[in-house]
Image 1 (cartoon, rainbow, N blue to C red):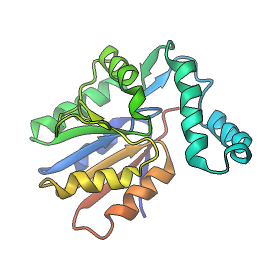
Image 2: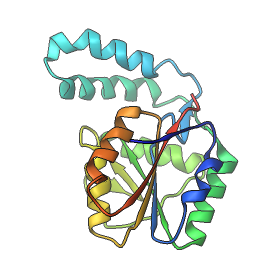
Image 3: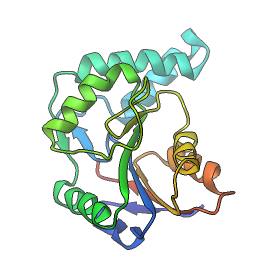
Image 4: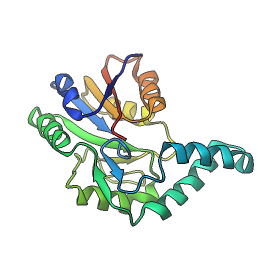
Length: 194
């Protein structure tokens, strides 16, 4: 599996061609919190501490997301790379492609997420009807595999190329594993902004 670590979004321009889906993660990829107390280190400590209590990572993640929501609901959400993000989204749309987000946030964080992205003036492309885990171009994965979500999008459209940007290596690997047996050209980028 090959991927490129990036510190800005301008690096992904070369892979935006016809029939491309550009997929962004949200937290620590397109945005970050002004007070970064709940970060990768916090999540690792939280998971280790609570795994024995819950016995599985799904329940640990759900409880961790509740803590995350309580803490971050009133903290300012900031761009990681505003100008390059705006340029990439515009260039993608100019080539008649779609830009969406797939986040590990749960669907009960929709309102906060939509408000944060509205405040940053980020709009994703609506590619199907709203439902429990999708709204306004954003897929709320929760515990579901990001790779499965992206594979499902590709199965229902004429996508030839996928550009996926996420700060977590395990999400890049998951998307790669789900799409490697397809005919889709996959370009993976690890965001290293935070």
